[in-house]
Image 1 (tube, rainbow, N blue to C red):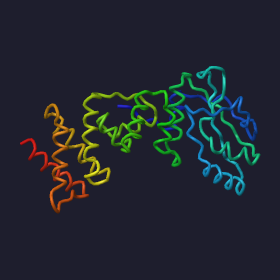
Image 2: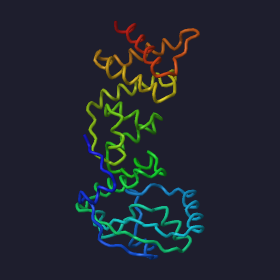
Image 3: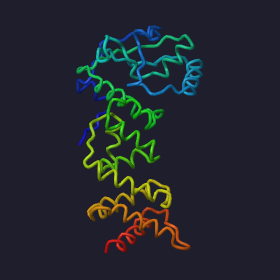
Image 4: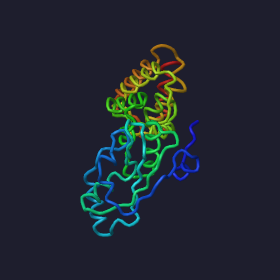
Length: 265
């Protein structure tokens, strides 16, 4: 199990060290020296920049610290803005100086930088799942899940259950950690079955979780074609006159269990 590391524990574990701190400077505007990179930074949210500009204009920028990582992992020695991308843009447009904290990874690799940046932003409300996934473009497993989200419109939590058998793995994915698909062929078949019935079951994460419990704990061991057989039975049940699946997770689970028993017993 991957241990969850809090941001304030990172320095203690010697994953990153502070090498310099620069007070009240416009140096951060030098894009040759201080860079944004799509491998670490999410897409710019213009309304968020405008909101920060209003805040900075009204209250100033005292206490705003930009965290940058000095690295050679991307080629030439450079400094990547790890935390404070939108603050940089807002302050630059106003011509305000900012404080800069310069950090360096003990093991200067792209993977460590991306993981650290994601962890820094894990507590930021402005970051959404797509932002975390977007900074892990060089992780083929996470890229696979990203494409599945676009294709199916399911959530990351849904896909973590289907492909990783654990919704809690979502935190590992968000931080760019190592994930392993235990049986991708079987998971693909389960996903296909889920998509068969997606429109006829209640549109809630709780009810989908009930479906996953039945598929994983009962249908999975019933042999070739079992997922499809079970979901065809769900489709048949949904067409029963005057019947509609219940939106309560508990009741819906019982309804699915009845369908399962009628199908396989």
